[in-house]
Image (cartoon, rainbow, N blue to C red; front, side, top):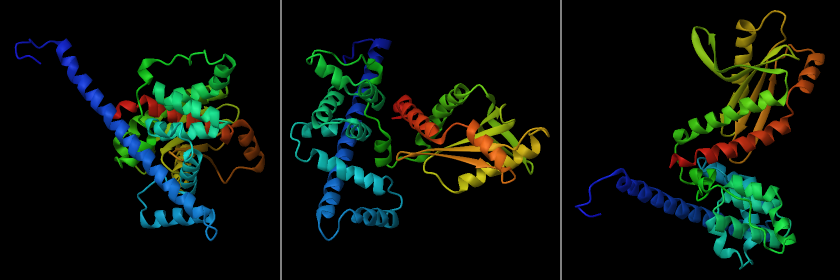
Length: 336
């Protein structure tokens, strides 16, 4: 920039451009290393499994070894290792897309492998995702809309569904964040907040029997304040329904915490004519989503049956939680 050029807001915008371009290059470099690592691990696991003296059982042994020797390394359980093996075996002889593999995120690779029915369809979506810089949300939209089939029926003349430029050019992925070993608090607060906001609306839309009471609802026990993520009232069941969202893997102590809240609510908030409260624990992690209900031990078999019929199905909640987690990740892609 010339020394004689007077500073203006237009000139300053160049600084943002420099930062964003550097950030984009850094993310692409990290993603490339991540994909190459998964490829190498997949090749290693595949070679061992193809050995007659090992077989697929070696995957469990590798996962157990990593868990014991390097407990802080996440994502290398049996499921994760099998995906890496599948990734390597899927593309090892595919020269058409080999140069594109590091240009899209691991989440997009998993989505393409699981939803594509043929090699041709898989190659098509890999090339499309790399060319259009699709986020996982936008790639899923193209997959769910059967864009490949529509493209083939139109003799290859149909353009992909319009994607807003604001959601392109981002390769930020939960796997990238984990690969970089960033502190949990780095994105957890915003991540959780985004999920809770959408979760509240989903619960209210699920059935007219749910009434929202409060977010970060305060209960007092022994003179100390505790806060419940979301608290609802179910009119059909005449009971309170506290919901706790956890970012990360499900842990047994989560049950203890929700049971603690149930006792506090039943003792301090529940009215005499109302039924015992029922708790809901939601865990969102990279590998899976977990949904668990916590019921009072004093419930009669009849009430347990009524609760089961009136509350959202676990599988529906798991699917919705996974969707909300992916949306929240996209909305927080600016944390870098």
